[in-house]
Image (cartoon, rainbow, N blue to C red; front, side, top):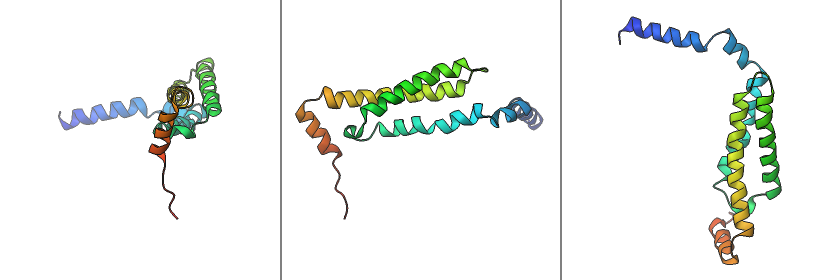
Amino acid sequence: MSQPVQRAAQRSLISRYVNKETLKYIFTTHFWGPVSNFGIPIAAIYDLQKDPTLISGTMTSALLVYSAVFMRYAFAVTPKNFLLFGCHVINETAQLGQAYRFLDYNYFSSPEKQAAIKAKYATVVPN
């Protein structure tokens, strides 16, 4: 691709995405609310690798309901907030994974399997 054509393509791309409407959107709570909220699903995804004995069934249930409500809210507001919807879809998926792990460990595992899981995640506390 020649340099003038490449420059024109870059200008076109920049003008499409970096304009007054985009900058105006970035400075709203419609954008920053979901962005700051992404900490919850990131933490939930990270926690999927941790010890299942640490999972709180009550908190997982609360987060499942919370994300379901806000997925609905994301489409109830005008304009529709797809960023908020995406955040809560990811959180709902991660929390469903946590709920499965909680139920599997606490209700569907034999005592031998629970002991094996506890031994797997047991750590020596340094002095």
